[in-house]
Amino acid sequence: MGWFSKKKETIDIVSPAEGDVIPITQVPDEVFAGKMMGDGFAVNPTNGEIVAPVAGKVTFIADTKHGIGLTSDTGMELIIHMGIDTVSLKGKPFNVYVNLNEKVHAGTPLVTIDLEVVKKADLNPVIIVAITNFTDLEKRLDLQTGLTKAGKKVAMLS
Image 1: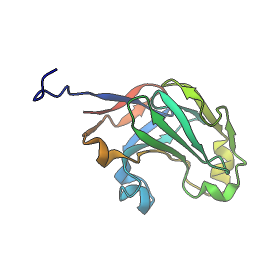
Image 2: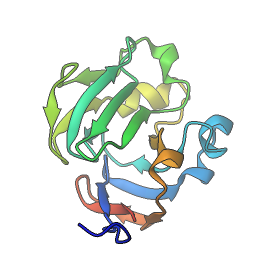
Image 3: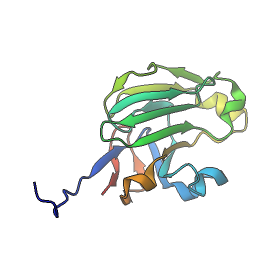
Image 4: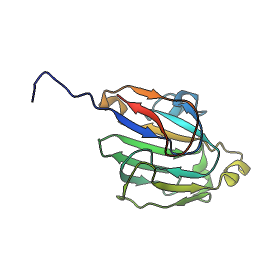
């Protein structure tokens, strides 16, 4: 064990949804775009299947089912926020498959969203992944934008 050598650990993050990956700064919500919840990315979904972006434990499920918190096996804390202002739908379009404190793998199905219900309510269904303890991790986020499939690697912390 060298005192002066520090192993550079990288953390892979997969897309929580099929669709178009965008930087978090392009999310049409000031709180997320301003990185007030942490750095991350978002996906404009083409379907409603949402999967875990990392392996870890479910630490939070919003009463209205629009948000799920995870703590990764590496200590990264993140929130998957499904849609802008979808809290107003009171859980209607969301079917959650996981329970609080459940262990998940990257790619484990978490939620199905009825995107038509979200769109009919004139709300944006964007799926946001925000790393809430990003500054504590002292890492850089590398993101691959563009079209992707759910469960495919789109980001890396290094």
